[in-house]
Length: 125
Image 1 (cartoon, one colour):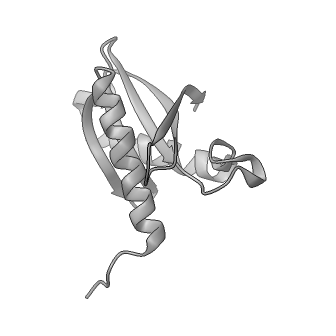
Image 2 (tube, one colour):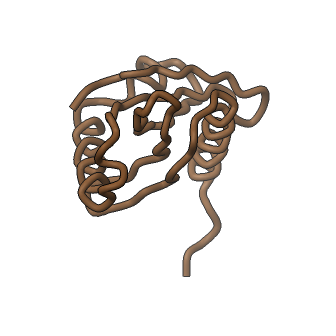
């Protein structure tokens, strides 16, 4: 039996909810949230109006120390995201025809007045 979510899990969930709401307001169509496979997890997969598939990593941190939330998407994390996205596109042929890109959304203060920074084309495969 799983216990109650930890504070970090609740913080991450809150940040993902804020990011999803922001994306919807920007006209994105949320296709998947929290896609999991052996390779890793994709926080949000969204189709954008221009025929692009945005694979979005949502990050939040309590402080800007150590480079802030965007800097925490290091080489290892990028590789896990690329592998998980590859697996998703192999499984979902309907998505494989779209141009895919990797974005990062940084959510500051998800408990209060969430501030969103959308870093488009944050890295490439």
